[in-house]
Image (tube, rainbow, N blue to C red; front, side, top):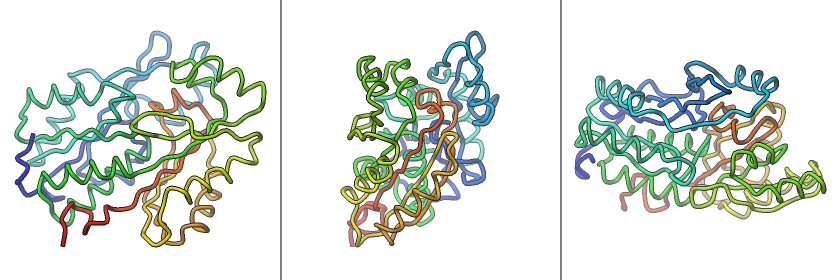
Length: 301
């Protein structure tokens, strides 16, 4: 772990995420590096963002006989990405997806300890998809102002605890087959035409509510945003979809109506890593306020 008192800034510190964060390449700062998560179709394993992109993934998903699976990135791949970041930066902060969704964070820690533990800090993000991307972008903003390593870790912890993400799926099939939800729930939902409203809670996918009919999904998401955000504070927001670009303007309009101080930080497409478990037709709204005790770096004034 980097010495907590060491000063970090955007010029000398790289952020390493994994491909589950769904931050488009043109949005990622040049200092970021991405660990590709492997996605397997049958006997063929492809690296997310390297061998296959979102468009190719969903096209292949439509014609696949069996649903794909994901796995942790190999130590060799993790080491390659970390060494690449250290070749151009003095220090690295790594933010893999939530430990409750994958063991990737532990694998990255093991590799970091082997390479140079004094220059790398691996932090539990407690999140995934653009919610993880949003946390990383807020960390990047703090690095641009300058922070200590300890303040950076504290900031990520505060953002992880405070951020919220709400999403809807077109079908529960992918979550069910991936072992993320019980079979009985999936069957009941399809029979009753119930649409699940899910959330990221304590680092894992959790139910929030259920609505009958697709037309009630957006009102339910609006209620979630209102319930879990403060109208008097700036709200940083990220949006993503899987094969549903039409819904993004509707979500942005919804959030702007109830939270006029909202700032869109990120709009992305759910890529192969998360798309394996969410399937097509999903969409997510993630949001967070900066910590209220100062400038978002963990300092008080």
